[in-house]
Image (cartoon, rainbow, N blue to C red; front, side, top):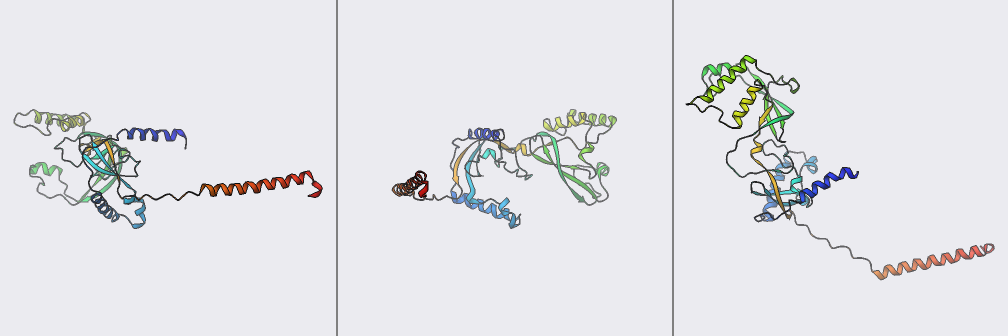
Amino acid sequence: MSAADTAPVDDQTRESARLLKRVPGRARPQKEALREFEEGVAQLRQHYDPVFWPLFVPEAKNMFRWRVELECGCTHEVYTHGEDKYPDDRRFPDLISQCRLPSGEFWCTTDHGPAQKPYRDIVEWVDRKVTEFPADPVEPEYDWMDAEDWAKIRKPKPHSSAFWRVKLSCGHYEQVCTDVDWKPEDGPKLVSEERIVEIRRDFEESWAAADNPGWPEKGFERDHIRKMIDLRWPRPEPERDCFTCTQVRRITGYQRIGWLVTRTRTRPAPRPSTNLDREKIEARLAAAEAEVQRLRKQLDNPGNA
């Protein structure tokens, strides 16, 4: 491996080390952390054949404990494989999609109150799963929908939909529903120019009504609706609201706790006696000198060799 290949890793390590700091609070007892870890490992083993455990199931003896502080001020305990692997080098799991978060992000389980989901561009259609549905009921499924509107969207026969896992520009993953026969290379379907005029008028009239605040409320949702109108109501939409963005926080610092399983220090093997080593060397040197003397005599008296 060349120096150019290793330089970015070294730079990242130095950048990560800058976040080492004293994190407020105290670490929980080691026994409690180990018990929780083993419970998680037991659940993880149920998802894999034993032959794959060495690949996907971590061992407690290899895990190092850290306390991390997030940009929201919350602190959490995390694990890494070894004491020199920093927490912001690791990609932690997204608790909803089960995909990996970008490096340096962590899902904060603290309730920070309601937050609007920002819209992000879809940058990759990863894979899909087709789901079968029975025919829709005759009566509306939703209390707020009248029979006339329900009749327009109701599917009287069994039908299927494709649910795509998509990657967003923020690095998170969400799900998008499409028709089964749709493919990313097809691009989105657009409504006619006449129809988009009607859609725009309906929304603007609803938002302007004094006795109706209009859905959606001002903010990300309404901005998104206007953007989709400008794009002629594409289906599927080229962007998706990201719930994960409302839950994850950047890691702003971390502090070492120690190994999850206490490591016993092994005493180094005793070094050989210096005197004994010297005696061996002197004996070898004497033998070598005697051999040199013998060879010199042979050179001086070749007839006696």
